[in-house]
Image (cartoon, rainbow, N blue to C red; front, side):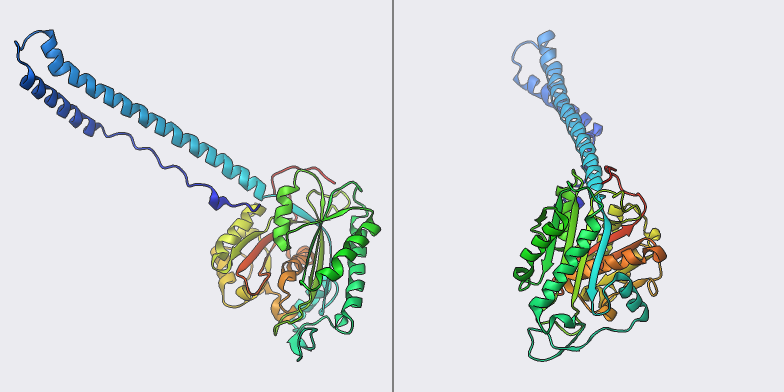
Length: 402
C-alpha cells in the first residue's frame, strides 16, 4: 500500500492545567454555601465540634474531593496525550523508513520512433527535433500526426511477436548473472486490446529463456512498483516492468513507445554501478509541490542536490505548475536548461512515459547526476507520479545484496 503520512492523526494538543484562580473562587463559593446552609438548617445550639465541622470542615472536604478528582483526570489526560504523541512519532519514523525503500535499476530496453536505446533518446532530446509526423494508426480511418512505430502497422501480430522476443531476450541477458532462486515478478502494462496477444507469449518465453518463474502482478505502472516495494521487501527479488503503449486511436502529438526495466530490491553484486529508483509518490497537478517534497523525503535528499528533471504529460507540460513546484521546493538546477519535457520531442507516450523518463535519467546520470522524474501516465486522469533517481546510499533499511 502507498505510504500515507497524511493519514496519521495530528499531534495531540497540550493539556491545559486547571486554572488555580477558578478553583480558589470555587472553594470560596463552596465554603460560603456550606456555612449558609449550616446556619439556615441548624436548629440546636451552634457550638461544638459537630457544628463547626459541618459548617467549615464538610464543605472544605467536599471541595478537596472534587479538586482531587479533577487533578487526577488532568494528569491522566496529560499522560495520555504525551503517550499518543510518542507513538505518533514512532509511527511517522516507521512510515518514513518504509517510504525510503528503493529499487536498483539493473537494465532497460526502449523502443520509440526516436531510437531503440536510451542513449538514442538522449541524442534526440539534445537535437530537439520533433519525432511526430503523419501516420496511419490501426484504429483510425485518417492519418494522425503522431510519433508512430511504423513496424507494427503492416502486421500487428508479427510486430508484437518480434518485440516480445526482443524484450524477453534482453531480460534473459540482464538476469543471467543473478541467483536462480530469486523470486521474480512481472508487471505488464499494455493497451487493453494488446494484452491477450502478448501476455501468454511473454510468460512462456521468460520462463523458457531464463529458467525462472515470473509471477504476474495485478497492478500497473508505478503503482505496481510501489506495491512491490511494500509487499515483497522482506525477501530479495526481481521486478520486470514491461510497458507497451501502442494506442489504436492516438491523439495528435502522442507517440508509440515500448519500455522495459529490470529492477531489484537489493544491491546486486553483478551490477555495482546500478542506480537507485526511489519510491514514487503519487499526487495531482494541483499538489505538485507537496508531491515533490514527499518524493525528496523518500529519497532522503535535499532539493539543492538535484541536478535536473525529466517530465511528461499534459498537466505538466501545459502551464507552469511543474516549474512552480520546483521553485517552491528551492531546487538549484536551471529550470530552462536542466528541466526537460519529453513530449515536444518524443511525443506523449501515455503509460510508458514514467519508464521512458526513468530510462533517460538512468542514461544521463553520468553527466547530469541526481535527477527527478515526473509523469502523468494518463492524459484523462489527474494522477501524477514523481520519483528521484540517485546513486548514493541514502536510504534506511536492510543492506543485503543479491
